[in-house]
Each structure stands twice: as C-alpha cells, then as structure tokens.
Length: 238
Ligand code: DAT
Ligand code: MG
Image (cartoon, rainbow, N blue to C red; front, side, top):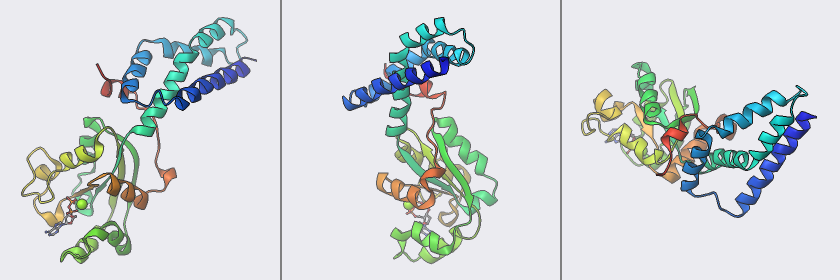
C-alpha cells in the first residue's frame, strides 16, 4: 500500500515537473540556486527519509501527509537535478602517455576536482594510430602531425569527461598554454611539463570540439549524469 502511495507521489511529482518543463520556467540558471536553497532548508531530506521509512512498515499515515505536502518541493528537486544534468557544459580532457608514465594522473585529476568540476566519464585506453589521427585531424597539415599521432598512440592515455559551468574555457586555463615554456606557473603544463612535444595533457578548445571529442572517445552509456552533494555549495545566485 505505502509503496503504491510512493509511486503515485513520485508520479505526481513528475507531472508537476513536466508541466513546469512545458512552461520552460525552470530552465534559467537562477532556478538552480533557488532549488539548492530549498534542499538546504532540510525539508527535502525529511521528505525523502519519511518515504523510505514508510515503505512496507504499515505505519505510514504521518509520513504520507508530510510527503504529500512536500510534493512541490520534490518536483523542484527532481527538476533541480535535471536542470543541472541538462545544462552543464562538458569537456574532453586526456592525460597523454607522458603524463601517465610520469605518475601525474592523480595530480591532474585533483586539480580539476578541487576546482569544483565533476568527473562524469573516465577510462584508460591505448589509442591506435588511426584513432590518434582522427583525434588530431585538424592538425594533419602540420609538420609534427605524424610524430604527434605516434606519440599519442605510444601508451596508455587517461580519457576523461569533466562537467561544470564554464569547464571548456576554464579547463584550458587550468591546463595552460600549448608550449609549457609559455604556460604560466600554476597551470598544469606550467608546473609539470617542459616541452611542447611532451605537454602531458589535452583539453578541448571549444564547444564544437568538446562535443566531437567526447563522441569520439566515449559511448553515451560510458558517461554518467549525477548530482554531486557539493553542487549546492558550488552553484547559486545571491
Ligand atoms: P593544444 O594541445 O594546446 O590544444 P594544439 O591543438 O595546437 O594545442 O596542438 C595539439 C598538440 O600538438 C599539442 O598539445 C602539442 C602538439 N604540438 C602543437 N604545436 C606543436 C609544435 N609546434 N611542435 C610540436 N608539437 C606541437
Ligand atoms: Mg588543441
């Protein structure tokens, strides 16, 4: 019985959600902050835990009421997650064979993670030369193209997709200039690399390349959408 109520409650929440969606009402960044504030007020956890406890216990009447009263907030929370999942930008980042061999995986991952970006896909892969040529197709006229593709396919690469507001452009800032001699101290290449041919990391340079590179390196099912608990402290308008 209570699980049936749970189902209708969540159905109702979803229908509230879809009417909100149709109104295109929630799709502004500002809503994310508002929804986070609702979650932070403590109403949502109460709602969630009451439903969990009531399922199958037979002592659910108080919980139903609390739960039903919380429906609009529940719809809001579902919406909050979907807005974040739908609107957040993604970029493709790869630790090249030199970065892997030099033991810099955790150092590089931690810089993106500490900034507040979210890892939504990661794998270790030795790309074939053909694959490397696809990845660097826009550089095929350059004299270093062949050597670059040999190098990228010479060993394990850590392929990643990172998500967050402004992650494409800011990811490039974290990485630093292409030539580590010109990268600022504090950037990944500035701190950890010396020459352009061994600059340890790749990052998409714009929205189009990000989309293409994510599609080249990952199948859709290899990427996850989730809400990280810290997001309510990372995003919000005042
Ligand atoms: P980035 O990796 O910063 O996006 P890019 O796309 O211009 O730079 O070039 C891809 C890679 O090719 C780069 O990371 C290292 C290599 N590369 C670029 N310019 C080079 C050069 N002048 N000599 C040797 N390798 C170079
Ligand atoms: Mg590039």
